[in-house]
Amino acid sequence: MNDNSPSTGAQFLSLHLLETLVAVLPVRDENGAPKSIVYGGVERHMITSQARRRAERIHSRDRANAGRGALAGRATGIRTREWALLTARELASEHGWQQDEAIRTARAVIEATGLKFGEPDKKTVANLTRVLLFAPADAGARIAAHIAEHAETVRAWTEEYVAAQTAAAAAAAAKKKRGRKEKEAVPEEPEQDAAETKLPAVPGETRAAVLTALAPRDAIDIALYGRFLAEIADSPNVDGAVQSSHAFTVHEAEQVDDFYAAADDAKLDRKKNALDFLEAADDAGAGMTGYQSLISGTFYRHAVLDRRRLRRNLQAAGMSEQEAEEVSVAAEAEFVTAFVEAFPEAKRNSTASTGTLPVLVLAFDGERPYNYAAVFQAPIDESPLDKSGEGPAGPAAVKRLLKHHAFVSRRRPDISAGRVLTYDPQIDELLHTLDDTSVTAVTGIEELTA
Image (cartoon, helix red, strand yellow):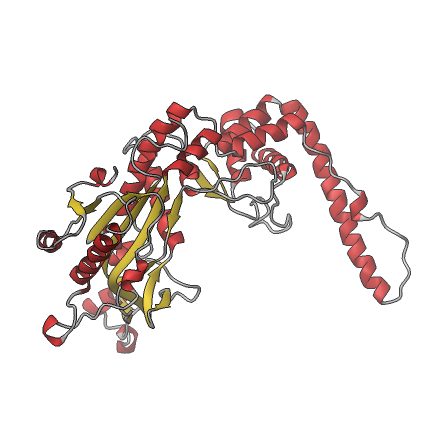
């Protein structure tokens, strides 16, 4: 067996899911409005794949860190701009460094390795990298450990680096000022060009330690979802093993702008206790009013796991073939769990959206990915059946999806028998009435994988 021959199933695991959401707002655009897409000639509500992938990744990471699920105790990653701050925190808490020196050193080391930071004179971004970097969660601790171990060398280099950086900034400012004065035809003595102030290279062993710490290593979620880091050419990028589509409603979208009024408790208490020294006008009206957009509907979403890619990623990160095989099986089980259970957390408290369970999950194996979005190009008409409609979107979408899968399965010999899971008793009854669905009903998430 090699990394191109997973021991379970074909190369690709295709997942398809239908879920019905009521009065939620899991993802918004820059104006706070629900996201939408036009498909089949009508507007549909949309939940972006980015929101879904993050929800799934965080769900799996939290379970692993808590010692639950198939990846219990396994290493995972975090995506952040705060690697200098995380490293400095470790230097201060675990190695006894002063906070100011720790931050200055951590930023210098990481910046000299190749990552760009925010403007030094802007406190809010000065110690944040300009891009989000997805790396193993212990990367900051590893970098800090190296700095502490080589403190004398790193401190001397940092002092030289910061001094050269300050000189370069001063030269750049002088050049800019000189340019303005030249426009005003005022002669001035030549200043040192910023390009002439070269920053000292970070010690080779320190750069290697930072690159090793930031490398994907054994972080399972990086192998699954991938990462791209353009700023450091010799830091490995990862082509993720998971493909995710945007979710969209199987019917035409209808948006509700909900007017809300928030009460002012203190004002209502005064009114309730009839404090006569207050004017009646002061007791009138709500404490705050406004509008929020809410969406409802049955959504179709889809994801694919490339089993061969997952094994290659894990082996490229340093795992043996046997370990990569074992971890891949566990990662697949956890990915399927997250696909079914995770949900974007926007407005979760005011809409209880994260408690949603899917209407139907369809899983099957194949030698290529299969996206069934075209099943819903013609929007479902939820008019009653006796008025030539298809009835409620949930059952209607299930019928369409399974009919389409049965049709495709007869023409694609690589597709395995499908497995379906439902949490809706009405759909469970429906499954027993359908003919030739090419699927087997299961009762647990763990049975969705081959």
